[in-house]
Image (tube, rainbow, N blue to C red; front, side, top):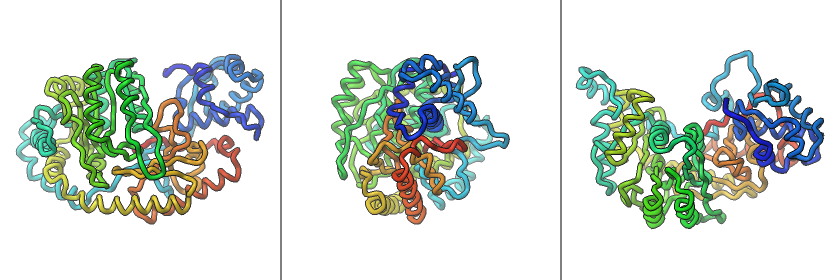
Length: 487
């Protein structure tokens, strides 16, 4: 069992829920259902008792009883014992795919920010890997550290970027998410604090919570229409000094979701602050290669030995490779390997041999990919200005997405309505803690222009419907919940 939600926490999540457009019990049930559908109230959580919630909301118990009854009837609350039902999603008699992994036919997926494979380059790497495979066949095939050829190639890449690195400082993983889970299990215990930028990558927040740790969000400064102020160094360093988090998870290179890039001066300040606080800096570099504005920065590890760097080929080459890595001091790598052995015994040898080829010729597909992404970025920004002029997009320096401020806190409602118009979105609160960023939406520019245009027109239609009938923010269908998986 996950636990229970106390009345104060639920009231905070509900926000200004009672608009008066519908009976109070109906509005209350709709908002709770929306929070469950969007993932802000986890599944299998016991809601407050009817009496306790009625007192917290200053409502009659009859209203709360009716709201809970509606949620049970719709399949979002178990019968439980008395009034302590647990959150769930409606039962289906036919099997369905895991949320977010299968794209329903006819939907344009704007929840994911990933590119198709760098086709010829990736294909050739796998073909060449088969010629390298016979040399490894006499071995057992289990290797918790990673194939030597790949670790050497990754180490050489860091050396070329000004960060002296040996193969002993590299652990190969099954992607960046796998790497982060290994790091969390090694460096942070249950109830430990993990500093994160706010907003940040949703899957990192999920991993932090799954490890039993507490996300410690530090907000990024606001933006103007065309410029980004970067990071709030005073807030970051003060939080480290006062809260002493066990680790900090940061995305300094074309931050997901904002596309910002941290300056070298800011990197130096953070490394020093982390060392003084005893906080391990864990840096996600998966988007570093997607440098659209030719920004010159040094890897975070060049500013201090205690930095743990996470990388992968998922964003630059292809997510289907499932190849990532951790770069750290040898002592830490030894600890990571011990923890990794509990989780799995190593990755695919053939994929690692192919990845070694790709890392050694890392830049080969990038010029063409970056050129296309620059065009896509400008095209998307133009479409937003034309069709959604009240939105305020932040121009990204790199990466794959545009972070948009909406005119009203309607991100979740748009996410629920959008599939009716042919597009799937990831609501802003997926990128934050405690229901934050309801007034933001992440929009990728990874799809072909025609699909991007169709998606923006679909969002425009959903926005028009929402503007015409504001009660739809809560009066939503109770069928298929919106997928919340994000890449």
